[in-house]
Image 1 (spheres, helix red, strand yellow):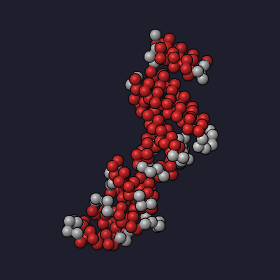
Image 2: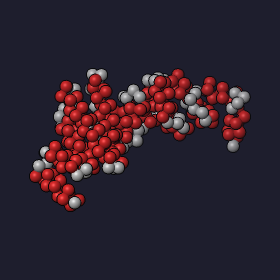
Image 3: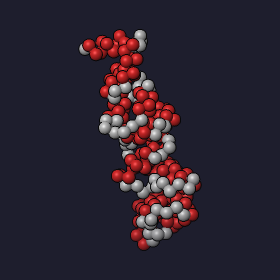
Image 4: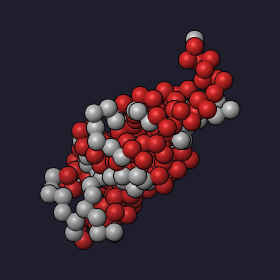
Length: 241
């Protein structure tokens, strides 16, 4: 009966909390996939807590611990999926992707830390990531909304990384509001004018492009838009209204 299953598992949790093998064996006998998933996930998060309690130093032991965490999370996600626990399975998959990304950087001899981050550490961590997909992996794992204007300002305006911009465009639209927020960061900040001009060429909204160019004293851009036969009429109507 279900009450017997629950009683056995409660007993094991209370009297043998460290014996995950017995817990899984009992749960498996009763086809209690959700409980197996919970046990695997708890073991993974306990291992992450142990990692968090130690100084962040790249060692073979750290890599080995993270490989173990990754395996536990994959097993947890599989067990949850078999019991149609979509929310829990998704949570494990997202954390597993984060751990896999962490291992990717460790294998490249990078000491960049992505696991066990606190909210104030997230922006600086995602800003140094080389691809937008990696930013999204971190964001999903932490339930974090990336500050794309800040990231794009750092990557594109300051560093001139237009490959990153192309990467972003495949995942997110370049909206007028996004350009507005990026260009606000130029006010009073030293930046590369050629990079700002080049970024502005990606703004499809003509009036926004004109206004931002004018505000940033990129007069050659604003003048060219006013003289362009495709945009001049629309711009003059907008400026007159």
